[in-house]
Amino acid sequence: MRRTARKLGVDVLIGVQGSRLVLVIGRAELRGPDDPATELPFLQIAEHLEPGFGTGHLVLGPTVAALVDAGQSARAALAGFAVARSWRHAPRPVEADDLLPERALAGDQLAKNTLVEKIFRPLQNHSTDLVTTLWSYLDNGRSLEATARELFVHPNTVRYRLKRVSEVIGWDATGPREALILQTALILGAIGTDATRRKAPAGPRTR
View 1: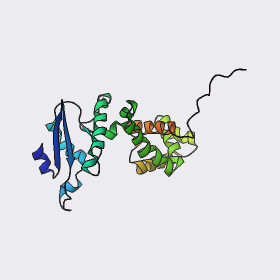
View 2 (view 1 turned 45 degrees about the horizontal axis):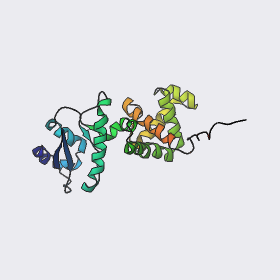
View 3 (view 1 turned 30 degrees about the horizontal axis):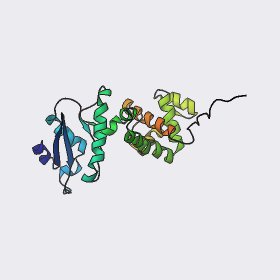
View 4 (view 1 turned 60 degrees about the vertical axis):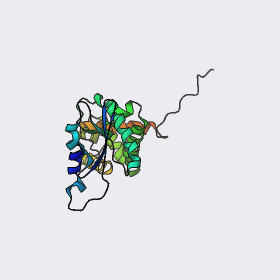
């Protein structure tokens, strides 16, 4: 695995924790503009390293700026590893952020915060129309026509807004897996929004 990493122009720290093989992948220095390793995403690097792992799930944590932040990525990867079996067709490797819904359902606060901060808030801050359209589209089984009827707009308007959603947050609502991620983010965002949070009753009333 170290030989493969050197060929890819990256550095690795390798350790064994119980039955798990753990790698930290990074670049110690910037490469030249003509070096293909400069633009190789970490997911592709993980795909090259995948044969060196045993059977089971392989989860890649999010990219962080420095080695001192590697713990944050490792925590996300471990949280994803714990729930990866709940995604029947999870790829190998799979990114921890692609397991955000499962992690959130398992009580992972980092996953909940990530869904709200990376999806719900950017859409809400950009345009309430995008949030409304996304809610409607997902509630209507990802049907452009049904969404257009509910919102009293043309289907092309729905299609344009969904394209804007993808441009703003990087997730495409038209795919089944990403739709699950987006719907989970909307639910968590709505629960945590003062305007949509219902106040609990003070207690039983007497006459």
